[in-house]
Structures are given as C-alpha cells and as structure tokens.
Length: 270
Ligand SMILES: [Zn+2]
Image (cartoon, rainbow, N blue to C red; front, top):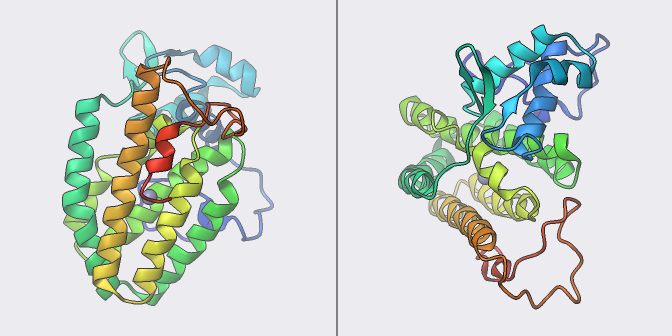
C-alpha cells in the first residue's frame, strides 16, 4: 500500500498485515531495523548501552552496512544516538520530568484533536483506524518483534487521529515528540497492549459515531490510563519490597515475566 511521503514510521507494516506478502525478499535494512527496534523497545539492549555493530552483524548474519542504516533511522526516532568516533548507544529512558512534560502537552492537545477528528475525519481514515486496530489486536500477544510493531501501531494510530483533525501543524508537533516507542519501553512486561487496545476501541467507536465529545473524553481517558501505567511501572521499580497479594492466584502477567502489580487494579480502564 502507498504511504504518505511525510509519514514518520517507514517500516510500520501493521497496516499491511492482511495484505499479500510481496514476493521479493525484505530489504536487509528493514530486517535490521525490525530486529534492532524490538531489542531497543523491549530493552534487550538496555538504555544507555553501547550498540555493538560487529556483534549484531554476526548475530543477524548480515553485513554492517544495513545495521548502520537502520541505526540512523532509529536515531531519527530518538531511540539511539551516535557519539562521534565511539558509535551508537541506546537512548536513555525518559526521566520522570520528561514524562510529566510529555503527558502535560499531550493532554492539552490530543483530546481536542480527537474532537476535531470526529467531525473532520474522512471515511478512508476511519476505515484505516479500524484496520490498524485489528492489526494491533493480532500483535498484542506476540513476541518481541510484535511488541515493537504494536508500539509503532500506537504511534500510527495517534498520528492518524492527529492528521484527521485537519491541523497539520499541531499533528507535526505531536509527532515530533516521538513519544510512543519510548512509552512502550517502560511498559514492556505489562498488560499495556490489551489495555491500550480497549481504550483505543472506545476512541474509534466515538470517531465512527462522529461524536466529538465522546472522542475527546475517550482520548483523555486513554492518556490518563497510559500515564497511570507509566507511574505504576516506575513505582514498582522503586519499591521492589512492596507486598503483592495476588501472586498466589495470578500467573505472571506476560510472557516476559514482570510480576503483575496491584496498581493495575486501579487503572481507569478496568
Ligand atoms: Zn494509544
């Protein structure tokens, strides 16, 4: 399928999940990007760590050139950065101050954009949102690569809503934050994908109904819930001794094994 030239996520293929696979092999850059993205989003490459290009080339059985190109793309997403004469490092995690600032601006802008989108979105955009949501549902319980694709899908979904508002300057401002991949780095090992899916569904239903007030409320609720998930993770990381009373009955919440946290019970999405 064709992409808008200005689309910031060059390899987000979630929209194409149900389309026929191309008969030609994927480019090596794309393969390197996909693998590196999943390693960075799931923190298999820890924040701040040196990214060894030689070792990666051996591991992925490709040459160093596509890995360097993929890293340049990831640098544009602010997931990696280059130190001259040293090489690439994984981006650090957002600080609590960054998170405060990001959610502050998102809460100011995105609910209002969702309201405008309810009034202005084309039927084509609404159908694209529905398709994307289905593709994200399929990625929600997958492996590390699927998790990274879910994060890209979230970026694309918010991008679609922002663009549908019809104000491209605000849409670009939101995109420039590159916030989604960073948020999903925090939320790896949680049930964030399932929560986000149901919150997105409320939003999409409101957009389909052309209900501006409901779309605004749904976006606000989604952002508040996302913020609360971030806070839960940070609290859990800083208070490892906190007793968790549901471990006797609950299985680990995901395949990656971070224990389920009590705080999830207070999530407004529940
Ligand atoms: Zn979202």
